[in-house]
Length: 246
Ligand code: SAH
Image 1 (tube, protein in one colour):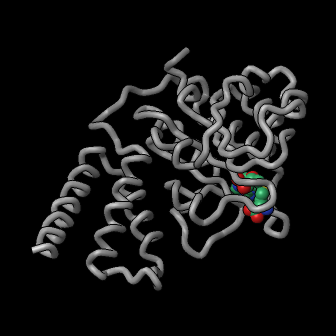
Image 2 (cartoon, protein in one colour):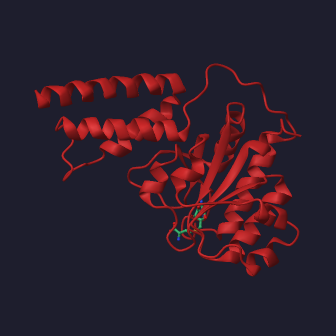
């Protein structure tokens, strides 16, 4: 059933240390009907321990995509949700898992959607969090809020299943949304212009990156809107370089 919203949802595991967690995550996913697994720099994969813990979900492991960076794993997605128990001073907009699952399922109307999980010991870095559009919390005991990786995947997969609840994906409306790769292109262009103009002091970048990522993520721009901004920045940079060289 390829109009199943869950078929457009991928679980992205970043720098997973323990192969058995990859196996348990696959089992947790398959039981909820979430089948796309992406592994960013796993420590050991394929691995017999992953196979053993997947018990019957080994087809998900065989179909898993192994990639070298988070950016690569989510480049073609229209939305990416980062799971982290740790509150950050500056990060993307925050939400709870139930709300994020509902939003994620709704956004499958427009394209692929990622739920991103961190390493067992260190979680997701601030940079990895800012590569996504939302920071998602699983409500937990504030004094003991860090779940086992595969158990966190289980809860997310369950919430996704409840949010999808056998519904077919609604038809796409409006113009194509920007993908994560389009957004990274815009951030890079903003960075270049901010540095070239002297607006941004590289020694003291402050919160600038986090702030524009947060702003643009909130706006959920169309691809064409992002292209307009990138085009404008490119034209300004060209004029600036031509001026600098004359
Ligand atoms: N020690 C790590 C936590 C690792 S738990 C840290 O300090 O960040 C492994 C992964 O499971 C996390 O990176 C996160 O993606 C997910 N996770 C665990 N508990 C969570 C919670 N309460 N809310 C959101 N994500 C959680």
